[in-house]
Length: 417
Image 1 (cartoon, rainbow, N blue to C red):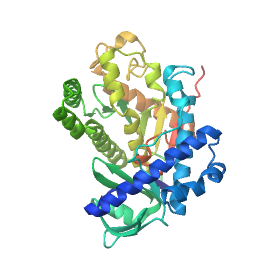
Image 2: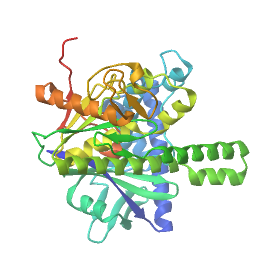
Image 3: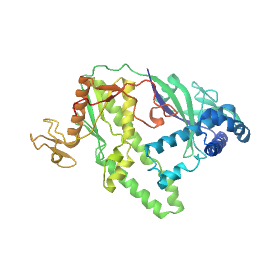
Image 4: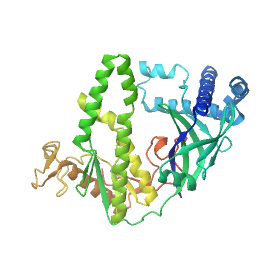
């Protein structure tokens, strides 16, 4: 059993090498845009069928090699498959809405610096020398240096397998390498579960009472958002330069904190021989009605990303993960089980109207999550399920598909009613 990870390494090309890589990405994405137009006009979105209409033209018109041309066509088909999935799931509005029609009634488009997949025929790694040999439209380019952290380097050296993506971001170059890391043996009989409550004020609270990344982080996010708004209104050349420099900063900060929280949670569960209990928050944005300030906060933080990080790190460590129904966990007393909306006195505090139990509201919720997971585990009301959908950069393969083997389990409530 394996865990598929995507490891980011930074390329260090010389200025001439960078110019060739930039021309290569531009050619590949122009070709992908043309293939997208052909697919849209013909209504043909399958890889092999579309290849009959575009393969030769892509090779000759943009000077692409055979492998690069096939990857361009496949990338276009994958983009249409993603678009169809988003339309079906309602992520682009209701059918007939302006947003829905804007997405569905035109061909897919690609940025000139969009990522391009490479297989082992187009990209070879010289691990000892920390260089790569990579295909470009100008021919094979050798001795392109790369750098990575010791952990990233070791993972790539031992477990790299499959495709890698060439990515340009803010003037820097990266390779996202797919690695297949052996999965640790699953702890089939955890002694208990560590419940995790996710929230807007406190990002994560454990059933042990530990609160992580709370109000201070939200203050930083509000400050960054206000600064971004001011710069956008100013709209001067210097303001635009500053916006460009600061873009993606909040996303990177959130990702870094999510990684740290996930690592800490999994390490604690592994150390104590427990499993991890998470809420199943699928579709939470559609189900919950929030005030405007809360909507911004909820939409700007990656709760799903945190759950995904915990899931794949747990798989590597052999820690079982159980997802439970989050309904009424914030209103249920963890001591006596009494459910009442009035139990939730405020955002921070919980006071049971039946037994008088008082606790931090998030800790009480995490204890309920832990109790539900443990009860379902003991009753055997569990079914194997894939890891929840996630970004391909945080643990899936380069195509964004779930690996065939998973140790994550989905809880099914079998109680009457």
